Length: 313
Ligand code: NAP
Picture 1 (tube, helix red, strand yellow):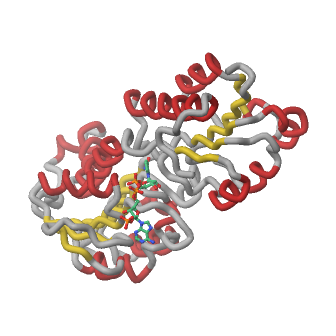
Picture 2 (cartoon, rainbow, N blue to C red):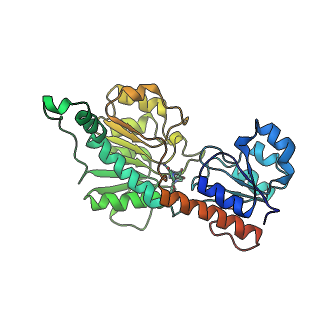
């Protein structure tokens, strides 16, 4: 398949680059001085785009690639792909569902525990010698708390399963009510937030869910509540989140994702009740390699005219 041109939009995985290079003609967009320069020379040679959570395939990129047949994203989230444009042009789209679910759910629970038990502050307390002057202050218990899941999809369900093992009660809000009798359904995000202590955000980012966690939801969670976001930054109104934390209207936050990554509002850095991670939900060696294999396998299926493994379109 050396005659198939695959363009990666941004560095995402050395292993993926190696696998693509072995099978296809690989173009690395970031190695060109500019997108325009790359497209002027190579637009006709690109049959597939591999994007990720940073740079996907927007309508401008899709329009500039006349021979584009498939977008295979190294992510489960589709928010960086213009799906309407792909449908219009008959371009296939695949993502990497399921294989990353456990890692993201593990990290979500880790974020809740780290925020409530103040694990980062405890670590600093030992390292900087403060322990010699007295004990660390008391933190907040996680086990047995009421948990809310915003988006009971693959990742949300895996978080619920883990939280259940901690003896937590589970409430959720999704587009659809599920057939799970021991999880309580809430018809909107405000009602969910008002009825839980720890709110996990795990829904997909779309026009409908942008800022689904707004001031009203944050205030409903309140000073005793903690927000954990492993979905996408723009699901939360970050400006409102910062002010609620600064004003003590929200108890704390554990965040893997931000609205304008890699830029994080500096006000967060001054807060002791937040834990900040650089979007590492799926970043284990095991999962990143499995995601890469799935990206490659989808491309191979497409160009061998076999059914796609994880088709979106
Ligand atoms: P999924 O199975 O498709 O779940 C998406 C969930 O979002 C579903 O429960 C869906 O509701 C809900 N949802 C969609 N639109 C909604 C709306 N308007 N109101 C309320 N809920 C809505 O996807 P997944 O595999 O669990 O992944 C979820 C998201 O996690 C991804 O889209 C991605 O953005 C994010 N993610 C982050 C990381 C990270 O590194 N932090 C890694 C992987 C994924 P229904 O159940 O009713 O369909």
